[in-house]
Structures are given as C-alpha cells and as structure tokens.
Amino acid sequence: MNKSIARSAFAAFFVAAFAVFPLGAQTITTADAFFSSMSDVYANIKDYSATIAISTSAGSKSSDSMTGHVLFKKPNLLRIDFTNPPNQTIVFNGENLVIYLPSYNVVLSQSVEKNSGASGASLATPQGLSLLKRYYTIAYETGSDPVQLEENSNERVVVLILARKSTTEMFRTIRLMVSPDTKLIRRLDARSISGDQIRFDFTGYALDQGILENRFVYDSPASANMFNDFLFNE
Image (cartoon, rainbow, N blue to C red):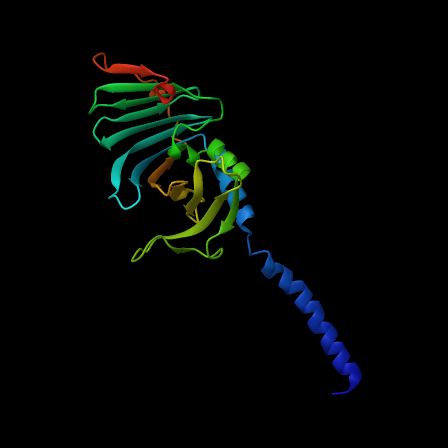
C-alpha cells in the first residue's frame, strides 16, 4: 500500500471513529444524570400507591418488619396503613405528622417544619429526592448496568450509593435500588450513624389514579391517648 492510500485509509477510519465513538459515549449515563432522570419521573407523578415493606435492625439484633399500603399525593401528602402491625397508621399532610400505635392505644402528633420528611418513606417523593441531591453525594455502587436485586432474584435494578456530605445528616449512607425501566425506587437501604439499618421495599406501584385529598385526613380513635409534639417530650 503506497503512502497516499495509507493516509486516505487512516483519514477515513478517523472520520468514522469520530462519528461513531461519541454516539457510543452517549449511552453511558453518569450517576448524577441517572438520579436526575429518576427525579424527573417523580416530579411528573401526581400521585401513587404501592405496597410497602419496612424492616429495621440494630447491630446484631434480629430485624423487625412491617408491611402496609402507602399513598402519596403531590405535593407532600403521605399515608401508610399497615397490615402488620394491624391498623397502625402514619399520616403526613405537609405540616403535621400523626402516628397511631394501636398496640399502645396511643396517637402521636408532631408539627414538622416545611420541607421536612414524614418518615424514611418520604424519600420516595419529589421533595425527598431533592433533599437527597442537596445533602448527599451520588455514585454507582458498581456501574450503570442493572444488577440482581438480591441473590437468586430475577429482578434487576440500578444501584446508587449516596454518602452524606456533612455529619449532621441522619443517615451515613443510603443505597437506592431503582428500576431501570420505570425509574421508580424498588428498595431503599439506609444506615444510620450508629450502624442501625432501615429498609423500605416498594412493589405494585399504581400511578396517577386520582387519589383524593380526603384520604390523607386521619380521625384518631376517640379512646386513644394523644401526645402532641412527642419528639420534644422528655
């Protein structure tokens, strides 16, 4: 091959490579970009319902589990009606958090600052994701490719690791497991400063069903004892 042909071949290869390689690079989504796309999905959801399972563990102690049904309505209404423990309820209307504990016949009520979360479950809302973006760094656990949700599971998720930016945050790290197709949170694992762990599993999402606001009005049982601002009571 003479020099002119070689130069032409090299130039053609360079042009082809320059045209193709950027297209390939566009398929690699950074963790921040993936998180932003997930946030955009939640920002466009008017309401959702889902089955929720919550498990907690403290050190070597065995975990406690709860299951129930969660409702969310934009902008910040949240309700969880538990089947285990039966009849236990959490309701947040954007300003006030109410927790009914039937086993103790107690209703706990707490005024909450604007933009605060009602519970860990509130992280799966547009406001919750916005707070995570502000106070945590975001990275892939192993990469952008979906992986098994857990061992022997056929379900695949994209796993993000969130690390707190300051020591004032409640959770040291948060693992977000997100469906690559719907961009909805499938599982959230949060670990506190003391090493305690809380897990939220979300399944059976139903989106934009027109949930009415009166679903988030809670009438406390007349026989229950009421404790207001319980977080600040000694």
